[in-house]
Length: 320
Ligand SMILES: [Zn+2]
Image (cartoon, rainbow, N blue to C red; front, side, top):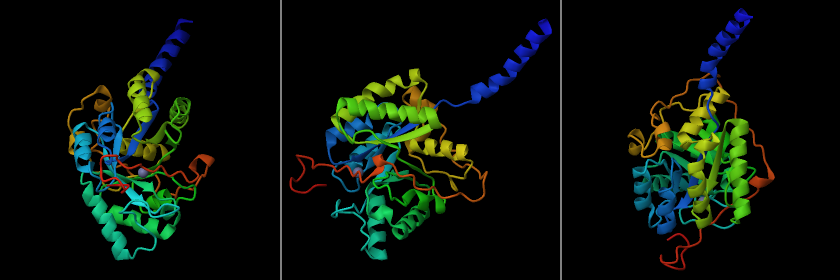
């Protein structure tokens, strides 16, 4: 009897490192469409934890907010305007009718407008992301720029962006939840719970939200509660690395470029968890990554949140 109990104790002790090594579910949150409105953009940059801030290029407050987000230890991203399903959208939108020289110039201009960017996600883009050739060009160009990751906002169920990023070996992942397609309290809370449920089920999940007062209030309230719920909030680069590990695929051929502030001691316990982002290379467990197949859902269908103009900034123009 005593021997059996001893065996049980030894077995339990042997299991402990496995249990301790198991990682809690993790989420990443990207707030995009930032830079047009000062107060809302600033509130997003000052959210608790490593919420990523995706900046529209050449918006009036983009330099100021990108610098603030970086100082707050957040990952800064370029929110790259790509051709929507209808119309032209943002002034710097890359259209499928653009010549190679034109689209290259637009991309370089957008990248230059957010020099702190460590990653990119698409603004709108239902049209362009559904076309393979422009996505092949884009992912190759981002790879040549060096050190960036790409998050497919999935504004169209037909998107080719993530699959092309995988093909080019660019660190990538996808948006699974839009927090605020509907801004009612019940809808927001429902999407938040769906995000947490996805993370519990799959280990990781990524949401995109917008700087609406309702979304910011939700995040200000819920982010501090995550730890008690056993959920980690991590930066997108960390999420991509974790997903790469779990899929056994090489997600980063080169170390990810990280904001300078990210390598310094964090300001909150949640940030401190993610203070070791420099070791970004995950080696290949499988030599050839298989492209991600498009798993369309109703929620993906043609969702293109559009920023309304900042009231104080040149009324009549949407993005200035
Ligand atoms: Zn957008």
